[in-house]
Image (cartoon, rainbow, N blue to C red):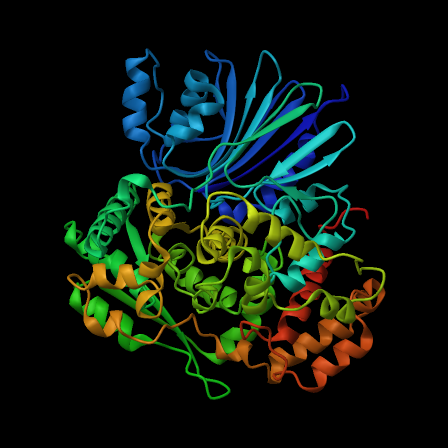
Length: 600
């Protein structure tokens, strides 16, 4: 887990080493254990290292292999790197390190762009061929590791975060109106390749892009889960599905213990993280470090769920760390959390993840998390209303239960300068839902949420908040083999028992019933869900600032209505509408205040 960046020139000029250095510096929290910049011809790569596998300097990056004529920068972890290294040795390759990054480099040389098909893990990487000057960029199947791009005539820059790209300078920071529409409609999700900035794009998940020395690029999507029933599993019983999913998850959890440093678990007390702990205990892990967080209550909402995480910790005898965040720590953390975001994210639990990561990073460098299970196995309450909906009406039904606003309401909220005369969010969802490979409306919704919403909301949130403190988060529910299996599971098994029914039933032999049968929880931060006091003042200041007034994204009368009743307007999924509106402005202003904005 690290930060990578680079600049590629196509105009005959030398890459701007100083700009690459600035990008590296902006990502220092992602990689506090080392840094490096390497230039070869028209290409310069930069890297910040978080040492997890091969802690020696032999694993440092950029990794140059003069014998093979390749230079690599890599972010992530290849969990099956040891098996692949043995295979590559059998092909005659010699290794100078025990790092998984070197396996990526030599795997690329041996198998070309098809190396990604062999990788089990999370990754983003860039490789340059010294002879041809060709650069290859790749991103893992579920988009767990980020990769942002800024293209201009004669030049391409890339980095693990938008703030890093902005720190290099010369980025078009005008607002992308399609991205704005997605942000305000699709529950703050902006699907790739768009970002809120016109001049920044993101490489889509499961994509490998090759750019030649003249700037011509080709892209290939190398993975797409099929949500149709698998012929070989059509006759499976519910028990067959339970056993298969549990076995697959068991393998995924074991895979993610690969490290040269201790691995802990973020334990919320929900079924997902609790099952990760149970499977690790089953595999013989002792004194496993687990971490839970809680906040003071506010607005009549409890800010902690310690009873459940305590029960799991006691059941499996973990080394449990209970972290309570007093209200006086919440307000100062909000601006720092916003600064840690690669893109504006509205979820109130960003602050929780940020503060949790700060504390956890004092004890371990790697954690496993239960993130992703709800999207993969139908755990959210917007899936049951889609049962029985005719496939021709999938998008209409999905928009009703998931979209924050209608197209008309978006245009009523924003000024005419930013408005659109068509609905790109509805069109995007409709095209995704209509694609072959999902027979039911539930499966079509799960596919969209797994491959898009999951990537650009919960997964991005976890990556950004943990990496702000040099903490690597691993997500076994997003093991691609587990996702492929779960995608073919009958939707009625997923939606049973109020959601994730097949997982709940599979867990009964491992977990206390109180964990399985509890009401679905969330990562509670009442002080943000219920805007009041100093946090509300922060929101008022952001929306009333000169920067916000000059940018004029929102209609003044719409903002005033929200401010007059700050906790009344809620989105379809119950989020605070004022917080969503303010978060975008707060993020844009933070980018400007940190002097990382470019032209635009």
